[in-house]
Image (cartoon, rainbow, N blue to C red):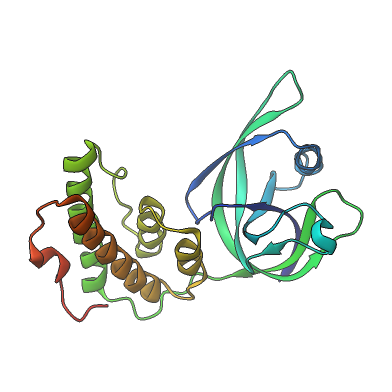
Amino acid sequence: MGEVIPIFPLSAVLLPGMPLPLHIFEQRYRDLMHDIATAPGGGRFGVVVLRSGSEVLGSGGGLPDIAPVGTVAEILEVTSNEDGTSDVLSVGSRRFRIETLISDGKPYLRADVQYLDERDGAIDAAQVAVTRELITAYDRMLTRLAGRPTGAELPDDPTQLGYHVAARLPLLPEDRQAVLEIETTAARIAQVNRLLRREIALLRRTRSIAVTPAVIRLAPGLN
C-alpha cells in the first residue's frame, strides 16, 4: 500500500530500531512538526539521506538529490523551547521506497512511498553466530584502544541484529545506505560480516592492535 508522508533529508542514514535526536529550528521543519502533531497514530516522518547538494526545495532548479530508500522516524518525545525551536527524539521503524517526490506548496518535501517488508531470506544460524563473534572481537579491540565498547547488549532477532551492528560501526553514509537497501536479512547479515572484517582489519593496520588472525578468518567462506 502506498502512502504520502513528509520527508526529512539528512546527511546521515537512519536504520530501523535506531534512535534519532533532532533539534528543529528551520521554519519549514517547524511547519512539518506542526502538521504531523495531530496525525492519526502519532507523529512520524520519513528520513532519507541527502546524496548531494541542498535539501532546500527548488535549490539548483529542482528537487533535492536524495536516496530512494529511507526509514520512517516515529516521534517518541518533543520538547518545545521558548525561542520556537524544539528538540525531538524519534526512532527508526519501517523502511520505505520513494515512488514519487511531491512539491505542492508545502515548505517541506513529501513523497508517495511504498513500505518494504523485512524478508528473512535463507538465514544461516552460523552466519548470525559469526556476526556476534566479530562484533565482540571488534568491541574488545575498541575497548583496549579507546576505553569503551561500541554499544550495549545485542538483540536476539537476526533482522534487528543486522541493523544494530551496522549502526554501531563507523561506516560512511554510502555503506550504511547500502545496508539499508538490502532486501533480505540473510544478505544483510552477510554484508555486515564483511564490513566487520574490514573494520577489524583497519584497526589492526592503523592502530597496531594485536588481534589474532583467527578473528579475521572466522568461519571462512561465510561471506
